[in-house]
Length: 419
Image (cartoon, rainbow, N blue to C red; front, side, top):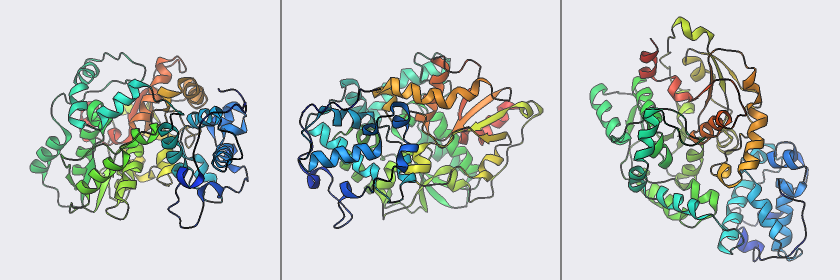
C-alpha cells in the first residue's frame, strides 16, 4: 500500500467547477459528502491501509481542498486516486447518495489530462485496440487458439473453447434461423475483450437466450462501451458512447442485454433515456427458464457465487436472481463476502497488482476449505473471472477449482457435454 499523506506539492485540478462539472443543477458534487464515515467500512483500500486518505471520504476531501485552493497541489492526491479500485461499494453505503463513481471518473480524466497520472504505454495500446474491435479480434486470435489448446501463459487466463473465426453476430444469425424464437426481442452487447478473448461466453449467452424463446439481435457495427478508457481516465469515452448510442437506439428491441456487469454499467451511461440496458441474468430472471438437469456426478459439485461490484453497486441490482441460479441444477450458495470487491476493478489488477492480490487473498481464502468436489466459482463478469482465476495461479488457493460465468452453467451445450 501507499505511504501516508506527505503534503508535498504537485499540479492538480484547476477548479471545482472544471474538475467535476455537475449534472445535478446547483449541487456541487465535491461538497455532497456529509462525512458520516459509512464508506470506510466497505472500502477495500481503507480496509487494507487504515489510511483515511485512501478512502472515499478522504479522497473527496483531498479533491475538494485542492479544487478550492486550500491544499497545495499534491502528488499524493493523484496516488490515492490511482489506489481507488472503483468498486462503488461506497455508493451503496452512502446515506447522502454521493455519486462517487461520477466524481472519480471526472477526476481520473482531469489527472491524466494535467499529466498528474501517466498511463502505462501497454494500457494505452490496449485501450486503443479495444476501441477498434476488428483489430482487437484479429490481434487476439493467437490467444483464442492457446486457450482452446489449454495453454495458459498468464495467471488471468482460464481455459475455454472460444470460436476462432466465427463472430457472435454470425453465430446468433445462424441460431435464429434454425430455431426462430417468438418471444421478447433483445440486442446483445458482445464487448471488446469478451468477444476478442472469451467469446465462448457470448456463444453460451446466445444459446441460453434462444433456448428460452428470446429473439436476439447482435449488431455488427457496435463498438467498445468505453469502460477501459473510463477506468484509465483517457480521452475518447464520449465518442465511444455516441457510437453505441447511434447503433442501439434505433433497434426495435425491448432491451440491450449484457453478460458483463462492468460493460453493462458503462453502456447504460451511453443509452440513458434511449433504450433499457439489462444484465442478461437479471433479464432471464423474469422468464420461466428451462432448468438444467444434472447427472448423478453433479450431486457432489458445489457452486459458490460471487457478485461483481458493478452489478450490485454500479447497476444497483440486488444480485443474481435465485430462479436463475436454481435453473443451473447445481447446489449453489453465495460465496463468503460475495458483495465485496475481488480486486479486479476493470484494469485495477494490472495497475495496482499488489493491492489487487491482497484484496483477492481475503476473499478467496475460503476456497481452500470449501465443501464440494469439484468446486466451481461462478460470477457474471469476465474480468472478475480473470481475477478469480489468478488466485489459483498465484498460489492463494491450493486446491483445484473452476471459474465459470453463470450463463455457462445454464448453457444447453455444456449440459449435453456433461451427460
